[in-house]
Length: 423
Image (cartoon, rainbow, N blue to C red):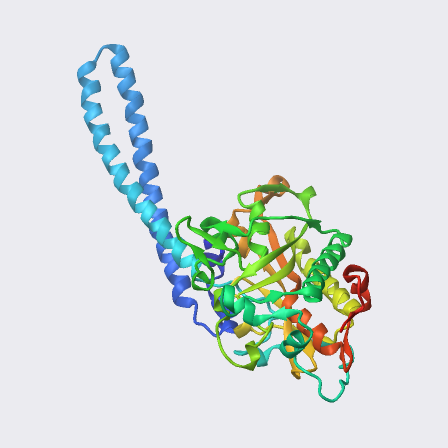
């Protein structure tokens, strides 16, 4: 969420920057400023009324002490009127504050200067490509056929017990899933990230804290009777560990990682691009997150990107990195790098990670601040990235490592799996 003080000072600059998202944000920015003026006016009137009421209360006390009860009672009638006036101003203040909050919730984050122009994912900028695309044998298959042939993932059984988008992993498929989770966590903790195990359901305040609400409310599973949400990513509960916290500069950097299942309602569409593991309602993911001093968040983003690169290179999967254009940038992000793995059998790139810097956008919602010496308190910066999302990594392994006689396992995973082939 953008700060209203910053909007007042940089309205035109924000409006220009937000055009990269292909939206005209100026009306919302101006609406926020207008409501904030109403809020500040109500606050000023309330403060003035309360000050007058306090002044009269002291005078009433003095009159009673001096025995002038008549004068004291006359002033008490006046203070009663001031209390009613104060109540009216308080209601106006509360209404304006709520309206301002809702407008601010509707304004996305401001893209950084390095975010390229563009409307669609085809406009994203390719930063680099790494690794040779393997040449497969004649008759190579997509992962959904391999999963059935080797009895490692059962999509029909998942559909039976829940519905489409909820696969059942079996035999070596289940063991490979567990191996990937452990490998990712070990890589992250070795890089200094502290592992966390967190709840898989969050309350509404947590959803608002990281920006999933209200922006993605219809895309999250909602447990209505308890008013809780199934998490779409570990980013939500882990970042909210620091909601309403006041940090010291010595606390930086805060580096966290965690594995969770993820739940997303928006997966339901049709076509080959969503077959098999390409898009699911429930999937596993390991996340990395950082809370940083504002001076260091750009460097932290580069470090996170470099870290994800090392994992993909150890898995020996061909990948590329994209800098997302304004039209493809997430609501809360100021800059995002996507990682995509090439699926040789499908002849397409599959997104496996997004690494983003949110600057102060989440921290303002979370009220996550740090003490900045004599300058009071300031908002921290938050970042997060997938390290990594499992479904498309697994799809990439199955398809790129397949042979006519079975599926080889990446060397780095063999100690975690306990086997080197699926046959």
